[in-house]
Image (tube, rainbow, N blue to C red; front, side):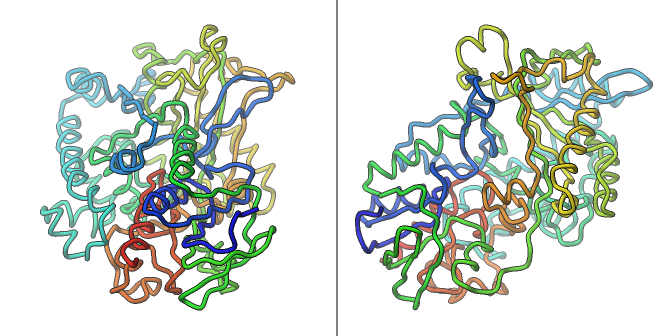
Length: 523
């Protein structure tokens, strides 16, 4: 039960963004209550012993860190760290009947050689260097603005200070710049994948959803690096919960919120244990859930488009491409069926209502970078984890029969991986204490049921460009602090602090930070 009957701020949802907001507000002397429906905090950023009788703590849902600003870690005194991956990616393919692939990493000289051996010249590598040099300069300019009041479109364009880059990434479909910059189909595909993570779109989608997704994937940390959380993703949310409690925030789990009532100046939050008053309510849940709690019409449906798979292996499988060590290939992002043409084919098949014949996906091995997630005995025996994220798997494909469709897609995805292995992956799977293979899969509908992600959408809704859009009805009074920080709703004292806020999405803490800043700015 909550200890008080009213609080300065009640935060609905104990995911990482809600915990960030709680810690900032409590440190500023506000009375704060966090209400979480599950029996633990963390939301999608948790570490779990997924397999019975096996001492392995997997990042079950979210699994890499890019967008978390070091400022938040410093401000909140978090005991949390990430580790860099030495290999960016490996993409297997077959050229002229020969198994080969593209390894990006290991230093510039090695990468240049890898590009030349695959494509026949150094042209693609030079284009790669120029392209990602441009995105890094973009990241250096844009990322710091994410923890500041929302800039206008004109102000952000001035900050970018590069009309060609702005036009290419903010105004034209991503496919145009990819096709103009690169000629090799596999290289084009590797670049495009950052625009399709959890986003069901083509390279030429006129809505630019793929551009917005790409932007957030290349600006993280001001570098675009995707890092491994030491101790698993739960290490971050455990540190955030500790920071919030140390600052004086109260966290109540097993407490599902059932309603929010507000008159714009005060609010009441009703949960299964009773009702508490609040000056402000911060909602760390999807806009769909906010509408439900307020008794309002829901927003347009959101839809996720991914298959999430966790595995534990007794050892890494051998590759058909003998020129690369599996420990290198799986330590970065291992791309499967993600050539440019393959991605388009998979999209068209899924859009027509069919499972892709060659499902695109990407894999990485957390335990290669951070063995601490495994028990000492498993480390000594050479066990490894694999995390797979499948693309172009929209929720609509699963509505008729979720379990059967999930199993079919999982089998097809693993078969596509097996095409590049010298041995079946099934032979490398560990078994749990009950003798079952250590593999679990989640469809978008599973993620909706377990985490409240609408349609399994990992961003809660389509991502938005990180600037103020005057046409956005949710901004309310554009002069208000919540609107200035991109966390406003149609109610003055109800703020959105989850992934569905402007500049939300990913494991970032940015919406939580910005909601807290809006509250503190208003006094």
